[in-house]
Length: 146
Image (cartoon, rainbow, N blue to C red):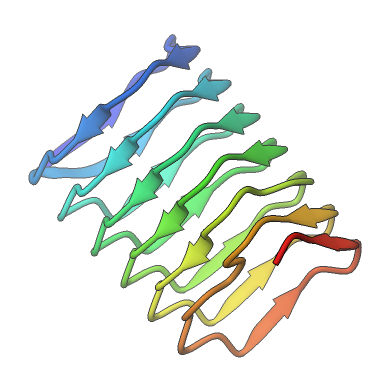
């Protein structure tokens, strides 16, 4: 079991924390931007905290089957394949998010609720195949590319 806290990390390039089977929790209090393929395929990861993160690239939090909890209070934009195949994730809230790329929140089988009060635009396959979703809020969404 590994809990990782990187308090001074502000930016990350590509392929960071990929296939770490013992990683259970991560915290990045100062991280503001992330490149491609970040935190993917970490089988035991259950929670991730990103209080300062504002933008992310593609393949972010992809295939983390034990992930149940995420926090992104400052996130404003994301690339493609964000929160994709996280089978245990039950609820998400993105208070500052305004735009998302393709394949956003797809195949999260346990996801029951989602809140996006600031989201205005979304790419293809937005909220695709979330079988348990019971409640979702997108009051400002005015653009969808599909």
